Amino acid sequence: MGKKRVKVGLVGAGTIGKGVVDLYKRNSVLINNKIDFEVTLEKVADRDQDRLQALGLEDKKLTTDAGDVLDDPEIDVVIELIGGIEPARGFIARALENGKYVVTANKDMMARHGLELIALARQKNLNLFYEASVGGGIPLIRPLKHNLVADRVSRVLGIVNGTTNYIFTHMAQDDLSLEEALSEAQRLGFAEADPTNDVEGLDAAYKLVIMANLVFGKKAEFDRVYIEGIRGVTYEDIAYAREIGYTIKLLAIGEDLPEGLALRVHPALVPLEHPLASVRNELNAVFIESEASRELMFYGPGAGPMPTAAAVWSDVVEAARCLHFNVANGVVEKELEETGFVPVEALEYRFYLRFLVEDRAGVFASLANAFADEGVSLDMIIQKRRVGDLAEVVLVTHEVKEEAFRRALGKITDISAIKPNPSIIRLLN
Image (tube, rainbow, N blue to C red; front, side, top):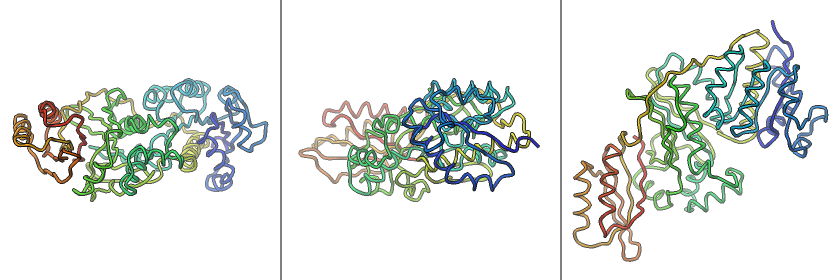
């Protein structure tokens, strides 16, 4: 057997870091009673002295110098929770070079540099664990690595951003505008003061890249993800979606197609009978479609200090097991295949389109001709509301290639009677 006592160091004492410390203080006995060795939190580093003091730990365990954790030969496992790309990437590489296992919740860094750091871990006969980087407290990364190893995954669908899910839930539930729901999310702590990464879809895209690497075994690239945020979605869209049997969610979608990976993040109308439609508030869910298991869903709190801390400590215990049982090179992720990427324009969808139009003769004929010219057929037309002198029209198409829909849309917006800036949302197919 290897080590009977595994010493842990933490870099980053922000919201999640404090959660990691608090959970350890509360449950360290529970953790150590469940395993055949001891895990101890030895040192915490953060540049902010006030944040360190707020942890309630002995002064000898606190330091403002990350090097005191990264370079300490007594530390076996380093938890990185500072977030962002740098210096997080450099800190993780430094810890691995120093022979330490590493645990991180850093989705941004794992999406952009995870593969190179996993390769470094493999080279050093170590491992890099990142369970908390996608689903917060949802057990997700480990099942994707291990439980689906004999299965062929064709598609992954995720509600992986709690802020946008909270916004859409309360737009629908409380008849709020997007900005009103966002303000409420910020007041309750479900959204940052600067919510850009959430509402613009970047957070979900980072998580999609991490999942795609695991489930498809191919090298997903963040810059090849089509990203569309939620700012264009209005309460009117939420209401119309509900009327026709849908709800609106921000989805991260990855598909393994013969031509390559299709990766995109965008709002979508989700049928009310789909399991993802019932995921509400700040909760997250990932829905897997595969050859053998067919359909699986992982569901739970996708963020927050305590759920994320639980995932972090599960990774720490996994790293400690490697040390205790002398498991060298515990990396299970293979070196990923290069792949092509399918642009969003080449994919087929049904589309929801809402616009304002002057209510006069010949407009619908022009509209129908524009769609017919590009082979776009309509499944549904709704006209029941007026905005001043204008009629509001909602159309739902049959499935059509996006590039054909966009060409038809260009012709439609050239019609003088149709007002600019229509609302366009894809339907989940």
